[in-house]
Length: 325
Image (cartoon, rainbow, N blue to C red; front, side):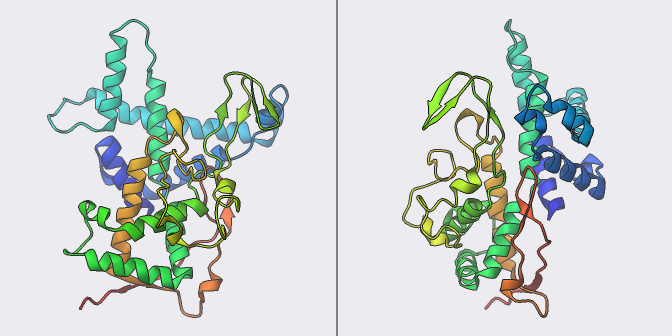
């Protein structure tokens, strides 16, 4: 699954498939795993800016952050160098080419606000979010635990299916599938605390006084399970979205899986397309069973710590080829 998601992301963002980038699967997964885990750690320097860095160095967190940063920076620099050195081809532009064109355009007009570091930052957001398989894994886990929902979404997909596989043009017809994805993101947002924000000025929020340059984290995991906004919040019930216009684009603050405003996730639309299309094909082609001796209640739903929310225990399912009438 991770190889599939990486290939789609690399092809879209960097113009190459997973194999075309010459990446070793195990090494690649290790690099991504290290990055998401270390970026999701709380650092002492965040809580105690003047002395916390000492604790981070003693615990080895600072060294792990540095190593992960250099791994990702070297990877993105290699991709950028390849794009800068190749001959431009008509119709072959990708996201990297677009970002580099912004760099070049701004450099021709005095003050440069968009730099190479900005390009790498955008690529990292797209890349780390794009290769994450958490949403698909959580969706399959929730569907397996809820056979009624599984049957309903499979019936919808198969009734709309005209060819051997679901194409991107078919997704707009699959309204219940979209509800399933929304409900999955409500319970299991990809980045439970979003990326940290820093306040620019002093303001008061409720009874809290917030000062300039304070670190702010938005707990979208808790918001998505708040009983003040959601009825039976712990229940997986996609139908709760059937009569609501609520969406994931950041306009409804009780549901912010991708954040909101100018700092929302730049890979939001690509991520949703990939998750919906992958799920649609998995559910249309196969029925999914648990290994022999397992029951739905045996599926572990414990979450592991890290930048992204992923299952602590692997989800093991058995695909059974669907026999079409």
